[in-house]
Length: 97
Image (cartoon, rainbow, N blue to C red; front, side, top):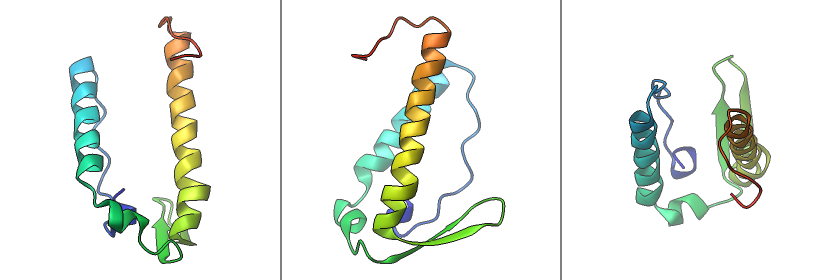
């Protein structure tokens, strides 16, 4: 959301060690997404976007390519990994969850 609205993400938040801390991070993220300007996110899919990684690599992409080739695969990976970790530690969740 930050990159698609013209901003640069800051440092990642510190890792939390409690469910209350996790809930706070989730609430802050949801608020940030809800406050984002949908028109700014959807504007100019062919516009330039530069993605600089901490390793020094820089990817010059269009905004649409960033969403399709970077954002969605990252989201899917992290969602599936979180699901797998929860299953591994015995949380009673299944496919419908």
